[in-house]
Image (cartoon, rainbow, N blue to C red):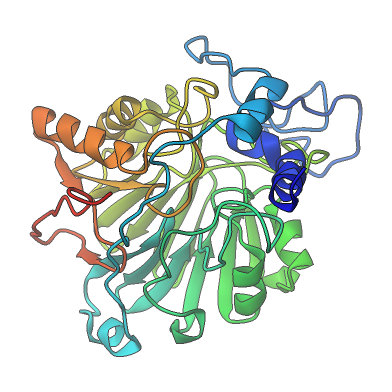
Length: 366
């Protein structure tokens, strides 16, 4: 066995359930501060998704692990450079302080400037989405700005604790540089382990809300799972988020399979000016925890968005579809349904509510 194959086996042994969402969960009685949460399973020490008769079952953990270990991937990593628009502190400062802006950092990571104050969503600046620095999915492109060039951050929002959303090097650098962290139940302990002061962290169950820095936040449902090792499956909650700044509303799906909760979110909030919807890392082996492009469009329609901004693609190799597939398929669907689509280049600024020209930037790239 080669060194590369040993490293690959080590990585997969540690995290093979984290992409696919099919490993077993803990059971039995336990002491927990989250026992009153409707999302906390009464039969065990873990959080659970609501029943969904439409959800298709995942393949077995062994089948998924074996596939990642031995299957040949084709076209999952770009040959040509992913286009990146560098972002400077001066450019950020020049953005209209009376408007709301979203800057794409890559994958599901975004920097927001909300009426002059800066926020982060699921920031991952590290080189790999992995527990190891030497193996695991490596990013296709550099971030459009460096960690040390980030402005002071008012708030940081996390959807769940997977490595492609919660990154140790990023959090360790930002630990005391963020005013307040907003996370689902149980994720606060992860941040404290990474050097964040406990008093800076606020944890939320689904439908709980707060206000901070002129922004109203609500944790909302998602159909997913959590865990960073083989022994902590679903010990923390996952969530989507609603961000309200002035008269504008943004929805961020986090990671999720398709479920009826999207319709409930749309009904409760009455629609969104911008909906950041997961679109990538889907596969028939794990149909319940990531959406196909067709399901992503359905989720967007359910939440009643005005603009569909697709995330969770173009940065890491996490599945078996080609790297362009999420973008190409969703663009065709949006055109057929006359949906206003946003597929920003890495580093591009989208100002909510203002006209823009959307570029299909992946076309022609290998």
